[in-house]
Image (cartoon, rainbow, N blue to C red; front, top):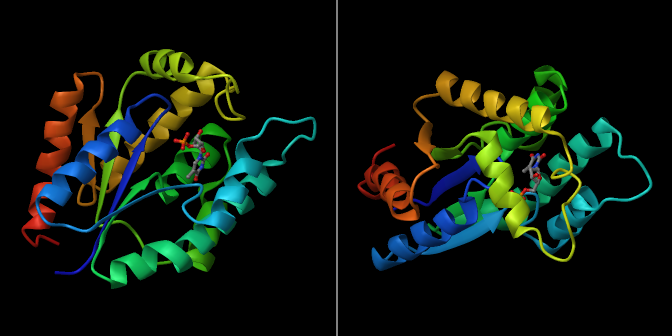
Amino acid sequence: MPGRFVSFEGGEGAGKSTQIERAAEWLRSRSVTVNVTREPGGTPRAERLRALLLERGDEPMPQSCELLLMFAARATHLANRIRPALARGEWVLCDRYTDATYAYQGGGRGLPAAQIDALVGIVHAGDWPDRTLLLDLPVEQGLARASRRNGVDGPDRFETEERAFFERVRRAYLARATAEPGRFRIIAADRSLDEVAADVRAALEPLLEGAP
Ligand code: TMP
């Protein structure tokens, strides 16, 4: 059985981490070796880049710096974790991947898609997930959930953006999902954890049975 690459996407407070944990537990009960990871991050170097990306500080971060750091983290994550895991036949469950760059840096920040396309060409070209689950919910609900979760550190550099930013992020995600219905499944996340988890399992079951 080949490895499988599944990404989970969504705005702030969509419940990705909880759903990834539940999906991982379910897959393990089906004798799958699961590798749960996240972006930006997932390897020691990529986690250091994540810290740089999320920290709020006095030095403004140019959009090009943000974009390049995202792909720098992705390059090392792919080379040192994702590709080796897939080669061993594991299932990689990744909390965000390149669709997040199109949604946040493209939709949210307004960077031209062509700039992102160029970096995709450099960093991973054809390495796309087998399935991408978009946990979608209204921005207001997501932000309310996310702010309840903010601990002593307060919001990170993205969480301090205004609501219109996250509306653009959501629209960009939905546009990508609609454009690529073969890879994406849109899952309404404004429901109970159990209902969302059932839809996640239903979206992954065909992959277990060998579907492309
Ligand atoms: P997380 O809180 O879901 O782990 O994601 C960290 C933040 O990074 C989140 O606000 C979204 C942002 N992000 C981007 O802006 N572009 C990307 O390509 C990725 C992977 C994350």
